[in-house]
Length: 125
Image (cartoon, rainbow, N blue to C red; front, side):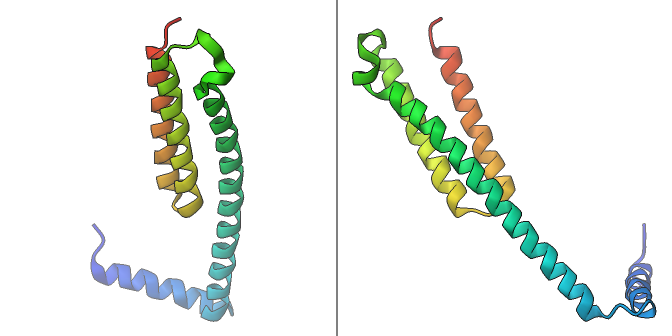
């Protein structure tokens, strides 16, 4: 294991190395700020695409949940399951639009995938 003194020494030499090369800490802070801003922009793009795709899925689920569009060929239980799926997709869209944490977004998508798998396994062939 690395002792606290060695860690401090490594950090100190890291900063001294930047200073020796003529890179002030202010410049490093600017680079970090730029990377953070770029990450936020990239995250926003990913979220926007994800929401767009989820909206398409919601439309499909809502269409299957509407008894007027599917007619008599679907059972009430199937329509109810499609309605639940549409409602859950709506909740996921809401969650994705509010959160910036990609891990939370991935967890929501995994839950959605599991729900769809459960529906597929329960639906008669």
